[in-house]
Image 1 (cartoon, rainbow, N blue to C red):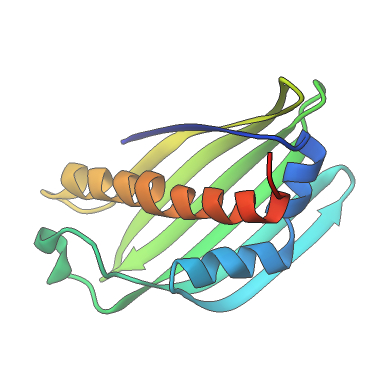
Image 2 (image 1 turned 45 degrees about the horizontal axis):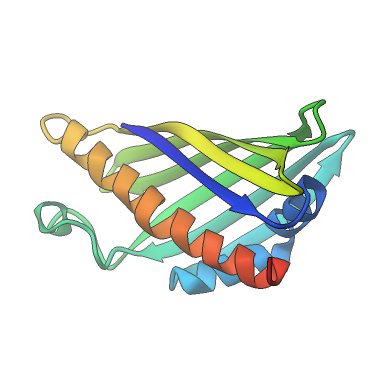
Length: 166
């Protein structure tokens, strides 16, 4: 299921990236999701910066058709690798994985931070895949909705608080 979300920020791409890769920011987003953090780290190698987050996310709010298959929480691992894009912005490759009753849910996205009107345009595009016969497409839709309507929305709200007023 395709993911496509665009937002704008008053800060330049370097400042937005600095916040997105800050461990305190990543922990704050996890708190907003009501998740229990097991690991948060940021590392740099050459021009690439990689963030790793492992958490136990609550399953409240998932569609009732899937509720009987999952417990109260699900383990999630997210790795994002950021590199300069050559145009004054940054490109992040995101890999998010969750295991649910022996089945995997995978979200792969690309995030671009591009200069725009004195600020930054952030565009997230990607795909959600769920390894579940019979209900895979429906589950992929639920994962996409969770990513776009909950995770990216809460991340956006925390990012706005961190960057300050426009």
